[in-house]
Amino acid sequence: MIRLVNPTDSSYPGSDSAGHAAGNGAGATEQDAAVELLELVRTELATLTLPLALPGAEEARTTAANALGQLDDYILPRWRSLDAPLLAVVGGSTGAGKSTLVNALVGHPVTRSGAIRPTTRQPILLHHPQDADWFTSNRVLPTLSRVRGELVKANTPASRAGAAPDAGAMTSLVLVADQAVPQGVAILDAPDVDSISDDNRQLAGQLLAAADLWLFVTTANRYADAVPWKLLLDAASRDITVAIILDRVPPGAEQEIADDLHAMLNREGLAGAQLFVVPEATLNQLGMLPPESVQPINAWLANISEDATGRAEIVRRTLNGTVRSLSERLTVLAQAVQDQHDAGNQLGEDVQAAFADAATRIGQSTSDGTLLRGEVLARWQDFVGTGEFFRALESNIGRFRDRIGAFFKGQPPPAVKVESAIETGLQAVIVDQAARAAEDADQRWRADPAGRQLLGLDDLSGVTADFPAEVAAEIRAWQGEVLALIRSEGAAKRSQARWLSFGVNGLGVILMIVVFSFTGGLTGAEVGIAGGTAVVGQKLLEAIFGEDAVRRLAKEAKTALEKRCASLLDGQQQRFLDRLAPAQADAKRLDELATRLGSLGKLGTQGGKA
Image 1 (cartoon, rainbow, N blue to C red):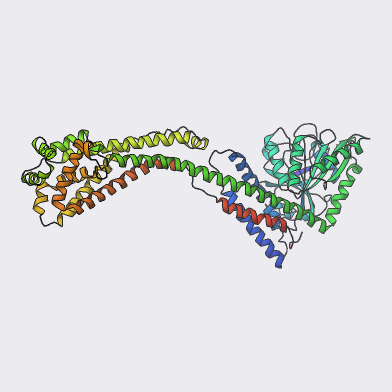
Image 2 (spheres, rainbow, N blue to C red):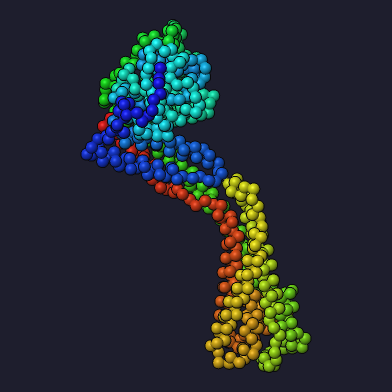
């Protein structure tokens, strides 16, 4: 039976040692380079995120998590300690007799067996006392806390051996030092691979992934079951050393069943797997198998224990295969990262296209004369006067210069109402186009599973509540820029009296009117009142500042307005783009690491001591 003791008890064998360093010289250099590469891979996997809901993304996340777990549980510890004892994990289906087999291998009950399932919840690792220091640290299976067990009291039946099944103890690993375990080989009794408990199945997979050697237990009735074969095929793909124990074989059926299983193993790439047949036998009063039933297995383990070269070959083969498998998984993850990158770019481009269209439409509305109608036109007409002035302008544009002199002699009304009308009209255009862009972007994202996931229950199909006020503030700021342009240009003119008599605000309003028709090109019958108002404004400014100066001022004012509009739209589109997480991983970098891992998987443990 196992008695649990304090894991910090210094009297426990090997408690002062945390592990051994393997090799020196060229071998150590090679080993250091391998560990450095693996740590780079680990860093990539630890920071890898696949946030978008793409086809295959969930599977890729699982692949990444499993790869990271195996790096921590097996690959890195094994490369750091090439001469550590082999870890042989005993796994198999429910009721296959794993715990009974482990008890038989050491010759006395150490792990609980019985009819209640699952009997193995808390994994038990049996090791030779002189190998204790390899396992007391977190060198291998670092996520499982250590609990030390002691062998006490002989003649304890197997049904009461070991720790009682406890789901809460699954995150710990019981370490038991036993002279019956051959030195250089540790035996770990794992939960059922097809357990009804999800946690048990997950733990079983984790332990098998950390093994140098699999002792896979099945029965004469269940050796063709799907779940065990899925694991065995995975082992074959990774070239893991596997020994299959065919348990509870009826007398007289040994050869027939063994031949059938051999044929299945050959077909599935496991021709090199060692096969042991354990005949069906009556258990003794302690729940133990006859010693002779497991004698071939014990002899095989003893031979591994005594053969350093053989152990090194098992380490090389399993480690190589696992690293190559990691390389393949990294290639898969590189593609998943690229898919995420491409999908994220497409979602971002959809948003940017929607708001770019809005910017184009705003640009058109502020340059084709659209704003020179309605309230803006009415206030402009109030500002410059109507009636005879405009009739004269329409009938004889050549007499405009004479009229302009008379115009300057008078006192034009304030420009405030025109500025206010421009603000209102321009605000309506920008808010409307931004809302249309947001609706377009929202619809594009909701048509994509990844976009729907990013939006969730949020509705981004309109502008934010404070956007209209923000737009109004930006328009007023732009109007201030326009006045500053007029003020700066007028200061350089000798005839300051002419433009000062009209007022900075008045000339600023005229420049705004010119901006709204700057690239419109309205001519002929389409000019109408809007075109006429633009001509009035442009001629007034040219009379004061000159043609070149007016063209430059209009261009600067137009550019300033476009920048402010772009900034306003950027703020609304950023609500979408902020949901796109920045890329943490680089597909090309993962591919490069996969290639390097492939080379490492061929290198194996050459140069290291095993």
